[in-house]
Image (cartoon, rainbow, N blue to C red):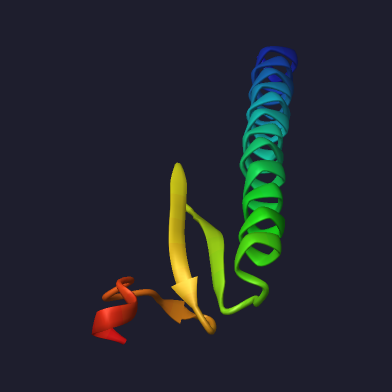
Length: 76
């Protein structure tokens, strides 16, 4: 009985470690493109006010650290 419970706990811990590695990999895969987008935007615009920030499974465009709204220069 104790051996079965111990094996079950070990299996759950191993499954959680695998899930953690998967999530960390997903985060890293999102971070790299965001960094590249930010570098490209800075290079193109010549300023760093706009950034792509990781949010959930996607990105949020920020202006000076706040969620960007009215991205048209006419609406600034």
